[in-house]
Length: 175
Image 1 (cartoon, rainbow, N blue to C red):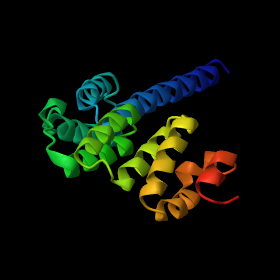
Image 2 (cartoon, helix red, strand yellow):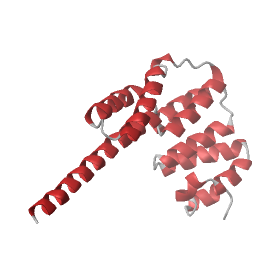
Image 3 (tube, helix red, strand yellow):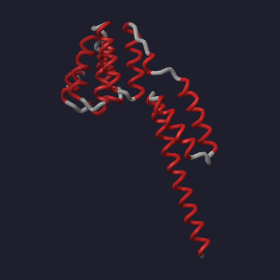
Image 4 (spheres, rainbow, N blue to C red):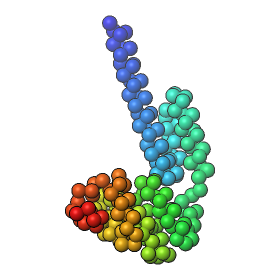
């Protein structure tokens, strides 16, 4: 009976350690996906050092670590012109860096102030940040530049939180 209790306790301890390892690994992967490679490098190193037992996960962590260590530093990004700013804004949105995306997209407007797509992306990113009023203002500007953004907004899942909003319906002419 006593050895059975120890076995259950050992299994629980192993399960707890495995959960901690998964949490540490997930954090490192999240930092990697956000593009925060310096943090990801530290997190992967810490994970490998602290949880060396699970070979499969450690091998994956080492692969991520190698990529993160070779990735160019953030300050190395040199943006020139509208196209660079627009594309980098999309990258920032995909990384979940919404404030960074706003900053880059606003800069893109300095190069091409009448580009409806940039206004549409600004509306999208503000929606993702939960800033509905700002999102609607940018969406209105996008639709004024090009009506097809109205149809896009009505079908873009990122705007779903605004679909029932009266102002959204007015802007997209659903009323």
